[in-house]
Image 1 (cartoon, helix red, strand yellow):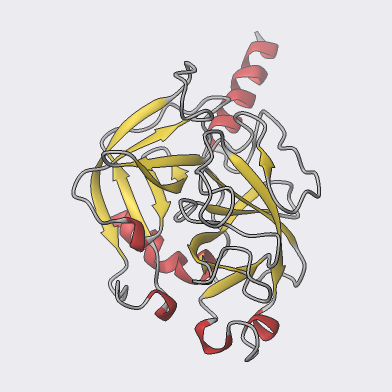
Image 2 (spheres, rainbow, N blue to C red):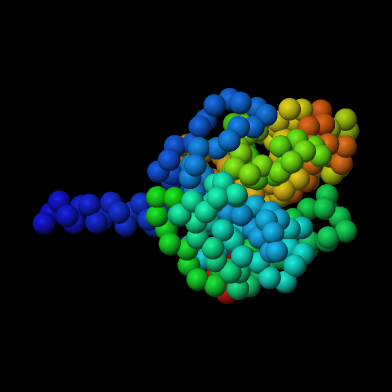
Length: 263
């Protein structure tokens, strides 16, 4: 009986946790993207209206974090445990979005002004299992070290102007600190302290990855969603000294917490 109780406790702890994956990601140092190991990023969601439009991150069983610029239609659903877009593989969970909350300071005519973040409340809670898990949220104000290895994931274009990926891709994007990213020959004043820069040159997110997570491993061994994919350089996804820019989740923790608590 005691052993059964211990097992039950372990199961409950795993389910109620965050940032833990049953299928270890391929943490190779490949910089220009590889197919992700299926279900190794169990918080990654595909945000879909009439077709897949963006990515997102499950942060609680019934809440998804995405980019404000992704919200252009009235009706959305999220698909969890998705890997190959062209196949019904079995574990997928498709859930309609009940409510959408765009950051009040978001200006859709000025992506580089920041606040490119939105929360989606789902019609029902996702079933948390070995292929669907929430990511951890960082502490308010947490910072990332220069060159810290993080991973971007999504089904975006494989390269500028290229085809969208059919299977989930991942790419290693080392963090570029704010002092570097805000230099004149980098992003200059477009890089705000409410943003995270990561990658550059051959390492980048691309169109279609928007709203998805910048996954960074914490010292506790758990994965944190430190960024929401926001924008890349207009000349192309892989422009030198123009790393991918993410909304810095750690600066929006009060808004996230308040929105989730009130709704």
